[in-house]
Image (tube, rainbow, N blue to C red; front, top):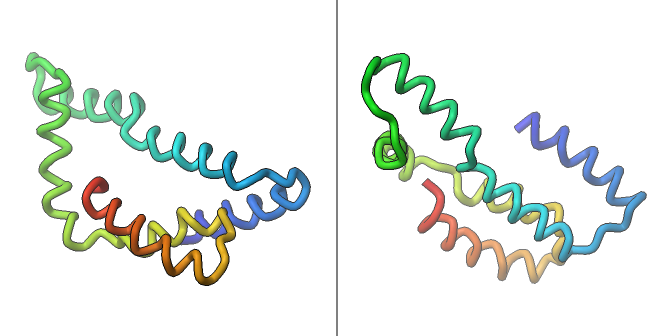
Length: 114
C-alpha cells in the first residue's frame, strides 16, 4: 500500500502541473496493465524454470502452465475491489460515477485478473 501512496502523491503533484486529461490517463493505465504479463515476467520465470529443471525446454505452454497454478490458489483471496479502486483513483471520477463504474470494472477484473 505504501508504494501506491507514493505513486499517488507524485501523480497528484504532476497532474496539477501538466493537466493531463482522463483519456490520456486511461490510456496510460491500460498500457501499464498490459505490461503486467510482459516479457520481463516471462524472462524471470524462464530463468527460474531453467535453474530448477536443467536441460528441459521452456516454451510458452510451459509458461502458461506455471502461471495457472498460483492463479487458482490466489483467485478467491485476491483483493479485486481494492485494486479497482486504486486503478480508478487517478481518474478522479465523481462520487456517483465512481459508484457506477467500480462494480462494473470489478466484475470485469474478476473474470480476467488472476
